[in-house]
Picture (tube, rainbow, N blue to C red):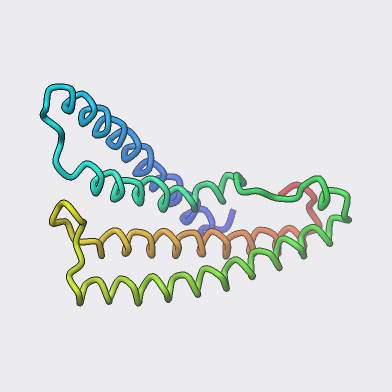
Length: 165
């Protein structure tokens, strides 16, 4: 396997651990808040903290989902196509995904800079919002790199004539 592809796939798998830890933290936070409310001791800022943790759950897991092939595909339709057509379609779809991710990355970067400048924080806690937007941006960049890897893998497979990608 290409060393770049191997590195990107390993990085995506490692960052997926951040998502797993974050979902456990969110679960404990919400449960502790519910229990605390029974004793009139709610956890202040639970809503904002849960929203911030949601970013840590969703964003880093996108790249690993693509590495694992977990995104929705039309395999029922494309599996009937010839091998070369399948690979060309994979390349086209990955290139379109890369273009879409570049637009999203630019938008997130502008949004991050605006929030740094404005000093936006959570509604109930004084945690700045921009680090979480930056995490989203880095996650989209990693997803883009996984799509680049998909192009590399599909192009190598097409060049070699292999049918099992």
